[in-house]
Amino acid sequence: MGKVIVFIAASLDGFIARKDDDISWLDAFSASGEDYGFGKFIQSAGTAVMGAGTYEQSLAHPERLLKGLKNYILTSRSLPRVPGMNTEFWHDSLPALVGKIRQESERDIYLVGGGQVISRFLYEGLVDEVHLFLVPVILGEGIPLFTGLSREISLQLVGTLPYPAGIVRLQYVPEPSPSKR
Image (cartoon, rainbow, N blue to C red; front, top):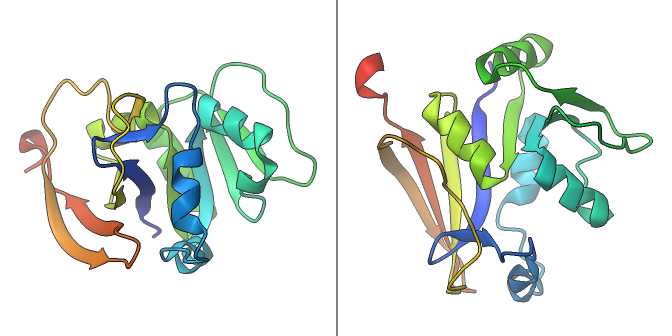
């Protein structure tokens, strides 16, 4: 059974993008050619799940499209499809989606984002691992990684990996919520 994995970069002050969805602040850290383990990670994934905003950003920046994976887009809106890309739009429950994906594939599920989607999955206890890449930049404002959580969610640190560029990979597993213990 594949794990639901968040694999995402955030600024030191917890933002995944500037207010206008701009992520160009990450460009300086990819100039060296380091992929921060993304290539290996993406090979283990069979499915990507993202919100409509993240999908629309990918449409505007085709190099971000995950064409090798089945993509589930969380939306009730009508959005364009990309020719040759396996895309399904989903507006039902998140546990039902994870169950459906796990019936379709035993590979990992890449929870792409954005922050609201990641927060909803965490809140519902559907995330198995969080791979957070802290980038040594303070944006001051932007789109937060976590948003709209009405309760505390505890995570257990299971690994760290520093990179020469100053990025630190933090690997966490969510602890069961008090109601699930």
